[in-house]
Length: 298
Ligand SMILES: [Ca+2]
Image (cartoon, rainbow, N blue to C red; front, side, top):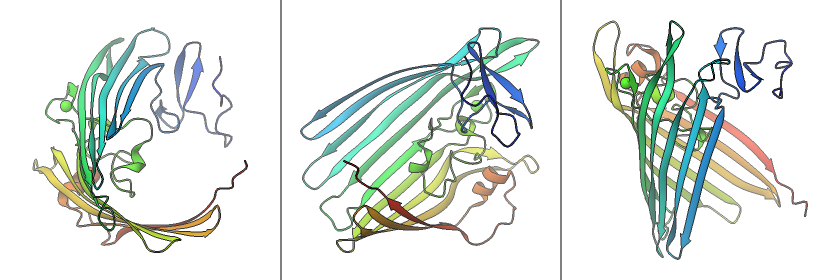
């Protein structure tokens, strides 16, 4: 069986991984890369999902197991299991609920003298939110807690990381966390995240809507500076996301967004750069413009 892109990216660079026989062989072009689409590649995956809807809400349960090969030839593998549930409730003027997930098993492997040791993983996340649907702007207040890796236990990973690209939807549109570079480590090896947020949406007219999100970020785990030995944890920064939507015509809408990160702390710099004295610009912001055309064919 061949992977879809055996010939490479089309720009001459090698594709990061190829399916050979029953395993993804690792190629080493510019460096070892076992990732495609910036996702880890499980060899096998099992999932179970059950959702029960009732009059005043719903609750969903999910189980997900990922199994990875340790290499292309040995047949050995390691895996981890994620399970949890998502309850949601609503009344006439309120919505509230949360998410609770745990991942346990192995985060990866280390190799010495041709034998593999699995690295223990046990991380969790919890979310709780309440939305006042009867108020102007339908304000939603929530908190996300993602466990971070304890840097003092190097033989195991205690962090929790979102899987399979759901990252952009959460933890701010600027994607500071779990999307691009790590924060005190990558994915489950990061310092974790506490995100306290307020979400609002104002209908300005029949055609126009303004969405505003505010995030207050902090880190549950500390990271030690390699040079000074000083430890950094707690508050990271405050992000404001604004999105303006306008319906131009039937099936055509214009969206414009602006986001800014305020009050970046020494802890954020330690987590991002490994150095709290790093100088960065005062304005950490981005803006975007999008025209969406969604025709109805039937
Ligand atoms: Ca650890």
